[in-house]
Amino acid sequence: MKRQVASLAELVGNTPLVKLERIGRDTPGVELFAKLEYFNPGGSVKDRAALQMVTDALADGRFEKGKTLIDSTSGNTGIALSWIGAALGFPVALVMPSNVSAARKRITAAYGAQLIYSDPLEGSDGAIRHVRREIEHSPGRYFYPDQYSNPSNPRAHYLTTAPELWEQTGGKLTHFVAGLGTTGTVMGTGRRLKELNPAIQIVAVEPAEPMHGLEGLKHLGSSIIPPIYDPALHDRKLSITTDAGWDMTDRLLKDEGLAVGHSSGAALAGAYQVARELSEQGEKGRVVAVFCDRADRYFEPGRPAPRFPYR
Ligand SMILES: Cc1ncc(COP(=O)(O)O)c(C=O)c1O
Image (cartoon, rainbow, N blue to C red; front, side):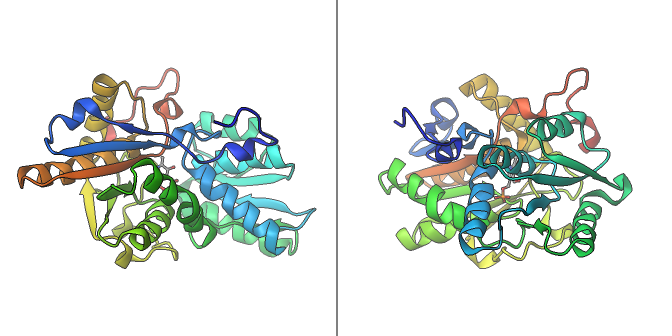
């Protein structure tokens, strides 16, 4: 237990692993566990990747003093980069479509990040193009981490998430299940776990529909494939519907007292499917799912949860 730290950055990682006692009763012989990534200081799994991208770039000179970090995210990576910028003392600029939620704008701006708005009609791809134009116009001014192609993103999970899981389960986990967004979590954790024990099954979860309500996850079939993604690294890829992800998110609240985001519900829906299959075949197992963030990140006063449009 770290009682005193020199910087908030030291508190990234070492998140708890909790056994899902109630839901696990559905799958006799197979235990279900959740890695609670919202225990990170910025409230999500993205603290790991953001910190690694910054520290690696500071170490090899890509991110020199005087440069501004720029990226195109309004989600958890934006929040992670914003607080790390404030904690370590460097400027952050975030490009996001002007129609992202007021909550997302306020959280990142509150840490002092400069917000640049791109055309709402062009979505997240428009925000990426905007960043690239900005960098072209001002050479040498920016450091652009670009989490989709930055090897430091999976490296964070290779160096931290996987060894933590190995230690927390006494090397006894049989299946690792996580959602695909940038794919960094599955790639980095999967690669290291396979080195530690090639028998561990790596299971990736993706939304079943191109238009879905599982924020943080990507439907790869209809998206630009992240350069860090290597499909050979997972043994299996499960498609989870928005409804299945949201139903499991609801169940986690009532059965386990866990209030998590919908990508966590989707990861557990995948883990549950795997656990049921094993249990029905009379096999034993320890299945771990990654819970990326908390439910309150998606609450907005006066707004109903946006489940309906995704049906
Ligand atoms: C809520 C949430 N879930 C899942 C993911 C996916 O993680 P990764 O980008 O490592 O694939 C993210 C990433 O942004 C996220 O914010």
